[in-house]
Amino acid sequence: MTLPVARDSRRENLSLLLGGIGMLIGGLVGIFVLGPESRLFGRGSVGEVAAATALPVSALAFGFAMNFVMARVRPWLRQLPKFRQVYSILGLALVHGALATLVTVGLFSVFNEAFRGVLLDNWVGAFMVGVVCGISAYATAASATALTTESLSQLVAVFLVVGALASALNASNELWWQVHFSALGATLDASGIVFNFTLILTGVVLITLADFLTHDLRTWAERVGERRWKVGAIRLSLIAMGLCLAGIGSFPVTFSRFGHNFFTYSLMYVFAATLVAVPILFRRLPGGFIGVTVVTIVLTVTFVYLRNGIDYLNVTAFEIVAVALVFVWLLLFVRTVSAALVDQPRPRPAAVRESVSSAERAALDRSGEPARDG
Image 1 (cartoon, rainbow, N blue to C red):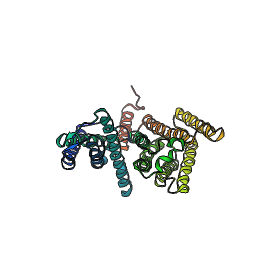
Image 2: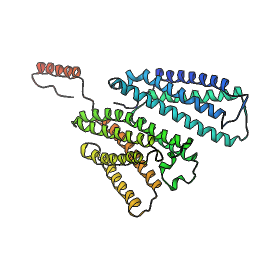
Image 3: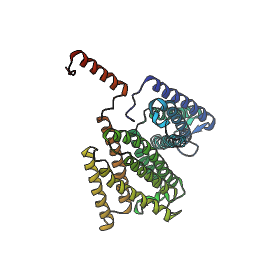
Image 4: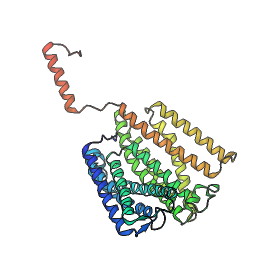
């Protein structure tokens, strides 16, 4: 079960250690790469060096911390095939590194607007690079040591939003929204690369989320008597959604319209099927979530009508609403499963049951009647 993991001194010390190492690496890179004077943002700037260094530093910090705590905190991950373990850790490490880079770029662009014309010498610039890398390494290590299904689902949503906004803010065509969201990935500039890379990585991590959610859902299903094949069906649907999302990013509309549309419509159909299937397969889930699913279905049909029926929404608006519905529903699904799992009592170990039975038999032998509570 991937419930919130309590922080202890050992995990905190690990995060601090990796943060310190990250700061040292960032500072050294800054000393050797930055010139005598550097701007805050732009080519060859402090922000560019910090963003480029934060990616590998954060990714390595996450991978090391994840391996450190996996056996004790998430032993079920060790039971997965080796390639799935490597895939999950690598995908999550890349997402944390990419998120650190995007946040760094955003912050330094704001700093550059606030401190226009400022130039930093080599030592100050290197110190700032070190601070950025240290914070990034600490944050990603802390995330790895406390990773749960809920926090992972939130990470997926945040990364998708940040990546899409970063692409939109740097789009060469300021009127991209008059076409469709895929227009952001249709160019070969930085905006297009960021957009497609975001979709691919989001799809990769969505497949990892399928393993986390499947573990929680299977544990809950075993306690309430649901059949295991139902959990397997949901896992396959989440994997299919992740593959479709990665496929959309891998086949920009300018590269292959057929491939792009194939994965786009496949994603829509798989999500629609999942929406309908969940309340049917898992009727023991809390009624509130069943109601949320019904509302989501109604909203989906409504927005399809507003787009295709009366042409009230343009394609971009419809895509934004559709993506929002998908991830809001997914976040609520994860939270519902986690809450339902907490509500179900853990089965008592056999040794405990045997101990209780022995005590009851002893009481029965002494009194000649069954033992009574109180």
